[in-house]
Image (cartoon, rainbow over all chains, first blue to last red; front, side, top):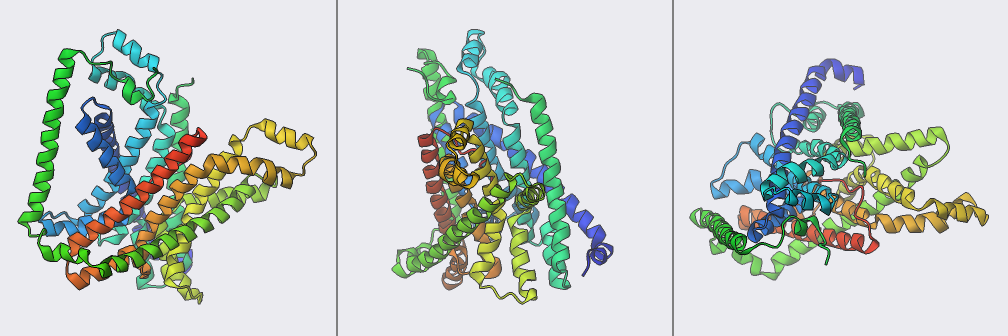
Length: 219
Length: 276
């Protein structure tokens, strides 16, 4: 099938799939970010068991393959009487994995903060949590815009996991395999999805480097 | 002594009151973690997942031999895929650093393309479209090639950042000695660049290894696929998938540790490491 044929037949579905991919990405990234900040706070707090728990969490979700996590959530957890819908399973998997990487980026962003900042905060009498909230996290975030941009793209790529479960509406990868199993969509069906993915990735990259130029702290 | 990381920097040495507070909170946190673990184990017990029949077959050598065969295929696919990704990435990096405009454009476009498209889409392409063209590929290559293609753009960018990190003086010195462009690159720049990027290349191997988990789509007998056979033999879904997940996590953890150690040794972090 040619691209124009495909577009006239499946055009609306591609639009819907693109929007689904965007929605999944936005939700996963927001959740991953919130979780990542929380885990990072655990990892730097003075209470050792919480620190170790944070480290453990990051090592687990940084190293588990997305497919393995999704399969565990979808097929294995019901044996523990823990049941999630397909959509919830996908969102959990696509949030937990990026959250570990988010925490890693925040940790390395934190390491760019000069020790003098901490000393100054302490001299001003800030409490630990004030210092974390007002000194450490804002600076760590500002120096991690580019890694976070890459993480957003990676999160978008991870949402293709949704094609592994019968989720409706379909996202870009699921739609292509659907079209190809019904009719011979051929190369063109893939090209459209790939172009939409790439365009999104380029847009994210562009926005990221603009924001980075605005907020980066020059040292 | 200067503190080594921000983690140690964040709090000053605690006084007696703070020490007391921290120790109380430490015990509370410990208790909470123990309760959490107990709840998880209880859930296993209540649902009968701790029954011997779900775990006893892990004591048999045949189980591990079978999983080991799968693991070997997984590693083989990951290493082959990473090797191909390195070769392709190298070519794309060379292309992007050339003066020739069209070549530079094509390389840049290929890098953006392979970086912006999910591995699953490449896998489905090799699974659904490639056979229609009459190109007969074994299951092994149907998973290895897409994983390699999806990794090569990232490898190209990592190599490029390594080449850019080599001090300019090296190039100038080599040029003034009368080296040709080719010899300059292979004898002076690249050997130094590769040392910078070895950590990010190992991180990339981890990503390829994770991507090979999708081998079940093309029914290649990797670790995950063999796990499925075990599951149907012993009717033990949860235990087998858990063990396999732990295996994947352990291997990737060790590779990441290796990468961090090499990065610490060369005084550089794994720059350009991409996530997931």
